[in-house]
Figure 1 (cartoon, rainbow, N blue to C red):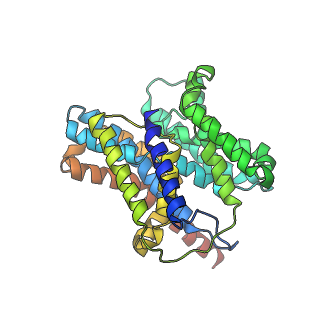
Figure 2 (figure 1 turned 60 degrees about the horizontal axis):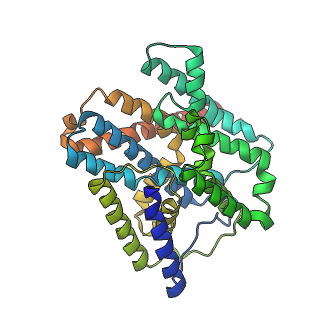
Length: 356
């Protein structure tokens, strides 16, 4: 329950402050243009993807230096700070989800087949004894590499939407479905479903993230609001962000608690905070994070291989704990993004030569 305390406190304080002080807060909504995609969702995905890598870097440092308390507590702080990542990634994945005539084609070619190929490769690299049964088990539960659990989790949501989209998108039921999904998600976070679900299913349980998926669908059908391209900084939200940092610092350094991925309130607070202040970032930073968000699948599939091979190298050899951390982050984000860039440029050159 401790990972929810922070979010519950934030939700209560934020709601009261917004209500009594009439603070204008813009809630995320799709672009009002059918041809223009709202890039802030992709920027959120970019931040989430970087956060997921930071979570795994903590395990990497802990593997080599479990007794270096200051370093491990610092990497734990950054890991806990990043625990908004998986819920936000699921939310943004649901926003533009539509049931089209070739619904499964894009999922097959852009997600399932790459996941299968990298699972096969990872299985033969990481494990010595091989069996078809073990691979099938690892494949369906996302256990070849730890981050791979996200793909079976996401595919379950795609299945649920495929069969129940008419219910999710019914306008008159939207608020009730949101409330029901929140209740199910909260009860799941408290562990009430754990005794009734297979133990292997816990890590890919859709009940832990149901609210974010439903909220993403709800945002995807909401009407856009008029945006101010240069909103004034919101002092209250910045104060709450400072409160977040202080509380996560206490949990990480004093209690050394490793948060879970499935918060409820904390990711929503981060989403609204970032959403209302994204225009304050420089264009270069926004474009970079946007590119990472658009090419996040490459990081999902390649980053586990990179961090796996790096477990044979002490991170301190890269220049100490601080430089080692930054270098590790750069490698695990940069190599997949560079791979994405090379592949996309190759496709463009191939098509231009083909039609020239």
